[in-house]
Image (cartoon, rainbow, N blue to C red; front, side, top):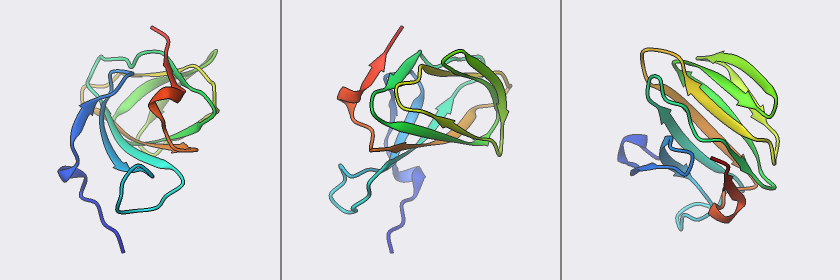
Length: 121
């Protein structure tokens, strides 16, 4: 069994300007997974930068808050409990439209790699 306490994971500012904690990744020495899992946070009123993941699809699982999700030419309101599939190479960003942090899991398969992420703005 392998357990990670998200409170113990280092918080970073990701390329898209979300506040991110990497939870699981094949880059870790202590676990073998074929995807990456991160916990992301966007502060009220903030929007992540437009970006795309080349050759990787992504799933957002909204844990807390509400926002506006943009994937290519589509836009939808999202909230706690929503699960969003983002195909590989899709241009994406999310805006926090609430008064509290927007918190969500990011699942990327194949695993996220810096060289496969393109920041567009």
